[in-house]
Length: 381
Length: 71
Image 1 (cartoon, each protein chain N blue to C red):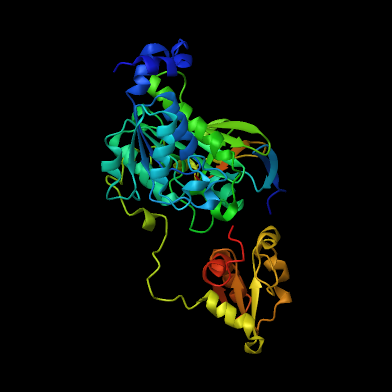
Image 2 (cartoon, helix red, strand yellow):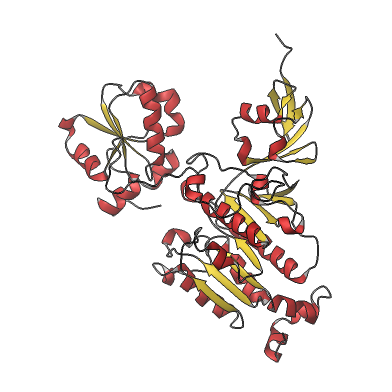
């Protein structure tokens, strides 16, 4: 592994660091990294690793760029909206450093392909956005003995670590043996995220990768770094391997990849079979257009969201206030509840049923579906 | 009946609880999912499988981190 004159000039600020030097830069060039996810975390990770001279960068993402990604996913630009994230990432990375070999995997990582995707790489970095993929990434890395550089974010807080049981540290399951029940932990799409936050956490992940490549410094193996952007505070927790861990413990019960959707309690929605508790946005429109039907529509989102986008004539009763304010509703009236995408309205429905409301339905897809299918003037957020 | 509620310092804040109790019981009482949090107890890492046996006493320091998945 040699460096040409252009590379020597490009990496000069590395080369003069005694901890890197020519030998270290060659190690960086000789390292291959698989970045799972080309979103908020994947963006700074891929861009900094490419700039730093990582030799080969694999990018796994099946998604396309959406306007709502651009506030934080700096791999992608306004002109990339609608394009494959993997393709867009490749173009950006090439623009930063054409010496970096980029291999794109425009596919959803799954139990069927994960081992084959990961096997050719030295280091894996987890920039995914959901529990099934995080457990899948962890398990595949444990089985293949690959370091898994972990980061995750939500609202103003983030966390990062390096999982590597083969290096003596814990794995993701040693920390979190099971995910919470579906719907109990909101995603960034539901709860929001400060745009800069993945930049900070992703840069911590990129730093750890470079340290692993160089074999320098004290890695995050066995430590969890936590960052709070509102307080601008870092803290750190010690971690340990769990001898009872189902995959890296003393008596592992997971010896091959499993069905991660089922593990995370996600039940696939049967196609073409309607949920009797749900109505469509078309039904909601009928109810609003025909007051004589006696159906009332209620928005259960939070006031900040109501300010961003609302359907004319639909009153607000936030889910967070429902417990104290449900008496404002009549248990014998028929209600259609809507939220942003249909999750919280289903929770509100469950609560009202317990209070004796018989005629409550949840609007499938919420105001997002309303915007897509009924009125494009209602902004999507 | 037992004596009055005691408290621990969780993430820097005083939290009242019926103590002593197991770490598992404490977490459930705080509406947390014990399988989905990382805990440091008096500066020591605790593996999730130890939560049911680990005793939490008044004045103990806990650092608790909830799982998040965003990326």
